[in-house]
Image (tube, rainbow, N blue to C red; front, side, top):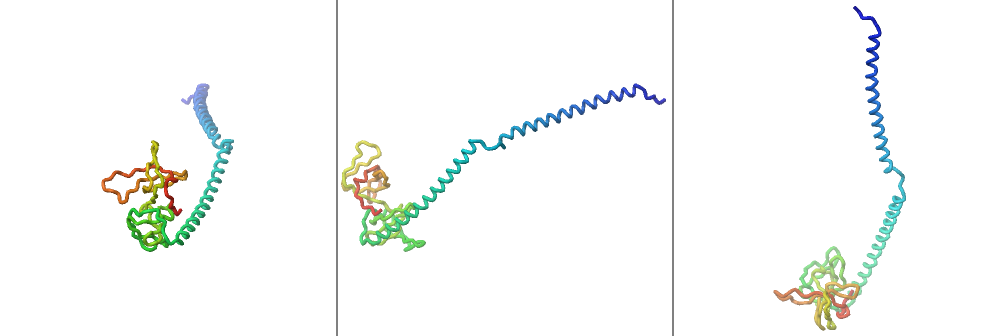
Length: 230
C-alpha cells in the first residue's frame, strides 16, 4: 500500500536540506577567500603603479642633465676636430714651401707605394733614409719629407722613427724610469709628454745582431735638440 504523506516523509526532506546548505556555505567561503587573495595581490602591485616620488624625479633630472652635457661635448669635439684639421693643413702647406728637409727621423722599414692613394700622396722610402717628420697623424700615418729627393708624402708611422740628439748629459740620478744618456748621443723619441718629458730609447742604427734590447726611459725635453716641425 502507498504510504501516507505523513510526518516521516516531511522529516526526510528536512534532513536533506541542512546537508545541501552546508555544501553551498563551504563554496561561498572558498569564493570569499579567493577574492581576498586577489585584493591582496592588487594591493601589492599598487606601489609599482603609484605616482613617481622625489627620488624618481631626481633621477629623471640627472638623466636629462647628463644628456645635455653629452650633447655639448659632442659639439665641442666636432669643433675641435675641425680646428685641428685646419692647423694640420697649414703645417703641411708651410712645410711644402721649404727647400731643405729638417731631418728629425729615420725610415726603419722600406715602404713602396703608388704616387697617390685615394687622393692622398704617399711617400716611397728606403730603410735607413733620413726624413723630416712634418706631422704625425693620430690615424697611424706620418707626413714626411725625404732628405734625398725632397719629395713629400705620407708614411705609415710604424715605418719611421723620430730621432733626436742629446745636447747635455742626462743622468738617471738613481731614479727608476729615467734614461742616462751623454752629449751628442742619438735617441729615438718614442713619446713626448705635455709635462716636458720624453720617453726615449737608445738608438742603434743598424741594430747589432744578438745585441741586448736598447734601454728605454724618460729624458727631459730640454736635453734634446729640437728639430720638430710640429
